[in-house]
Length: 187
Image (cartoon, rainbow, N blue to C red; front, side):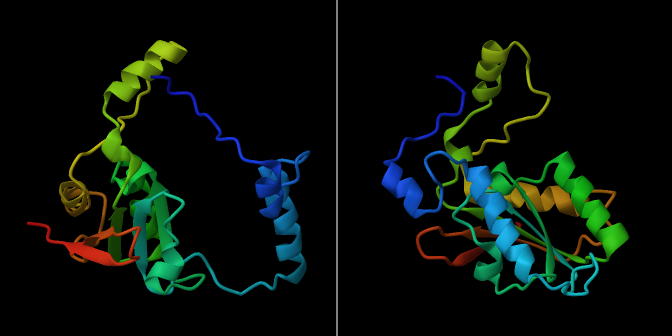
């Protein structure tokens, strides 16, 4: 198994239909979109403190439109995303800054059905080491049971000595086929 990323090939007309010219890159498309956005942009006049005093930790999966799924507006929350939505040391770092410097009090954890981490193992790190000649310092944080992984993430937040607010921590699994959240009992 190779750990190198492979880009699926698409017919050029499919790529062009999404706004990426055959001679341009996806990044070019994003920069062009930003130019259009900035032309109509008006400073909303808000600061970095989330209006709802909540931080949402979720998977980076492209199928999760968190703001739409949770009815959130710009400025409502802090969003921390990574592969699997797992609570790692770096997530604790972000949550600590979010709480201690920017006033958040609640933490919402969102994993999802069909997560890619369910098909990986820690063997991924070994294969990566064999390919590039260096073992990554980070753990893959793969899991087989999404509910149990949400419980583990809730426990990591609730036991972190760095976080001020550990009482309002709730975990969910987002169903990518229905769009519904299912709350996970922490017990």
